[in-house]
Image (cartoon, rainbow, N blue to C red; front, side, top):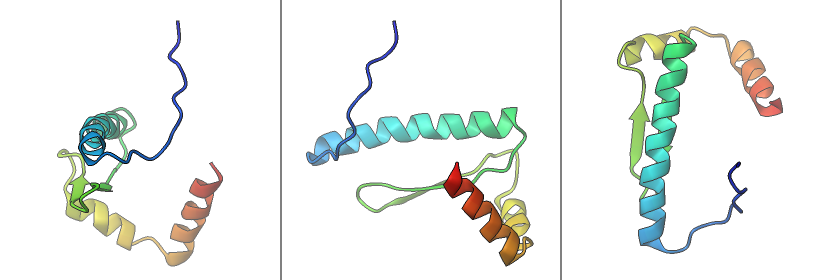
Length: 89
């Protein structure tokens, strides 16, 4: 039996919002780690909490500097092309 589709709506209660954020963040980081390992891809994930605290994730197998260097070496045209492709999908 499949899961029920949940209705997405903003959570107003700060305590519930914080709890949900922690659980979802943990799952998101796990998925990012899996994708990095299985697909041999470079991933940087920047997530801001409801209290505006940033959380930066990147696989420990690859240095952050190398990933950022790769991004900075891309031309502005190539970055924009990839960004527009991502928006379509």
